[in-house]
Image 1 (cartoon, rainbow, N blue to C red):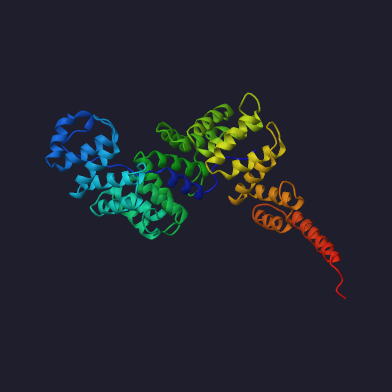
Image 2 (cartoon, rainbow, N blue to C red; image 1 turned 45 degrees about the vertical axis):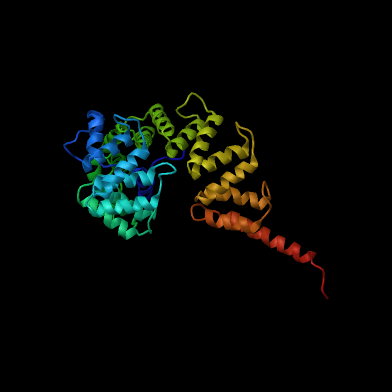
Length: 402
């Protein structure tokens, strides 16, 4: 059976960069949190020009604490405080510009305000600015500059910056690749109770890369992350139960965890659950239509492996109606995302002209791509023979010019 264990530090990078979101600022002040204060009095202070009250009123409107939630009002109050130099308001204003709905969303403005807040010493903003430099959203992409801002925030103790800096140390994005530093930063962030970092620290222990494999520690950190709702951790713990690493093998518990991760939108969990239904492991009985449902959800989330698996089912018409054109589309998507199996399958179709126009040059290109991960020497040899025959037939059909 295809193993679902996370395969490399590169997946760690993809995981953390996808899940560590822009933090908000909750500035310490003598003013109580909006849900515990008299909003009328808070508004009076804000209207009189009290900068901290303006920030807190913006926070109240953003979170809907004590007032009806209104991002427009939140933006208005944050703007007032931000323009007077309140770094927490600047960060939260940038957050609204980055993540708000149409009419508010403006990544260029987000980058501008994150930078102002970062220069004023707001650690959350420094981490956010570093992330934007890494992705190039709203600002010119500059991985070295992104790493610099993340390092600044991480050195000052910001756990999210530690986590994201760990990601780029693992991948070598903007900094020299340093798996040991990646582990150390991830551990520090996990110890500061950042759930995403806890999940990835568990990954380090489960994989046994950089540090010796320790499945009991992996289970501990997965459970910590699961308590905060991290779907990736549910998936990772499911792998431990399926493979019996650090725990007694329990395929039923593995399926339960895969299902929870899948229902929370994690594509690896969706793909794993689809596989369970396809093979009938850990479920009452095999159910191809249920497998196809989960493979499709994972494909819609960008998972190439699930696209290839769904294509296999559709091409065979096994348990679901056959649909060769859709299978071709799915295999093409999976091939473009590096699936050697999909590349091989598409090559066979182009060689035979099944579901696609016969095209030996495309078949050869696909087999060459697949050769990086699997032995396709026999297929390439057969293709060369077929090409030679085709050339001979074409030459023989040409009129004699003599």
